[in-house]
Image (tube, rainbow, N blue to C red; front, side, top):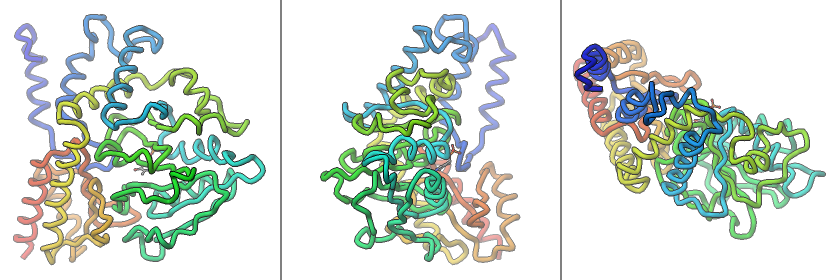
Length: 384
Ligand SMILES: *Cc1c(COP(=O)(O)O)cnc(C)c1O
């Protein structure tokens, strides 16, 4: 981009870089600037091919290489065991709310399709409601009565013996609760756990002895919207309802190496660049340490303040999504306007919760979190 032959282009890139702000969007969310710069450099011609990745056949040797490398990097980053398949689908996590039941609810027989759901926030509510269309839904536990401020104690979960699987949303993006560990609920004895990990996948390691299906849309912590990642233990593939659309049938998708239909090629390419970036950061264990430091700094600041508050039980606060309220809600608009003027954007809370929310995914730097805390301290001071 610093091509002396093209000073206009170099100037444009320079300006755009200077314009970048700290983006606390819950999703689609901030991507590492390095990744976007590389994509810009490769936009018109990918590695001497004369075409953009967007313009390549998904069946070309080049694109097959891009996809295979992305999947290999993802497998390495998350230590995904050999007996798990990585599938790339479309339809997002909300699509999976139907796709998972269609593929898995008949696991223990077609007569009584059934699954257990642990309801810990807005997203798991949506998941269990969609699943009702496909079979029997057992709400094993719910924290709705407590406004989702904590994850129900596993000792009280009412799991059924004949359910195909137990569904968890391991990070509730809107309410801001996160499973710090997936509990042992008999996975070793054949219980299947399915996790919607959309908003924290790759932010921490995954214990594959505790979870058999992990899925997520890419636009929080992986890359652009459009690709959905499903990581599924092999023996759980092949149980789909006959009416499951072919493009969403895990067996067909697996048999065609995620090219049963045209995959979202550009989104996969960018996800691959993000995986390389993560490896340069030291991998998932290293990024987890940074995520802990970022989240601790922000929660510690909230907890010492009487001006701001977070209402989530400290044992299950999300490292990725930090909702908070101003004690004086009449200042909300001023807070958001001044934050924006300070280069801190997308801090408004979800309408279901209100207040504010800072989403601090892998791509958010400690500098960004520190800038937010500095701004909040100054806003509190000048609010009198
Ligand atoms: C964002 C999100 C979804 C919805 O994802 P779509 O890509 O819009 O389908 C579902 N679950 C969780 C946990 C999310 O964060």
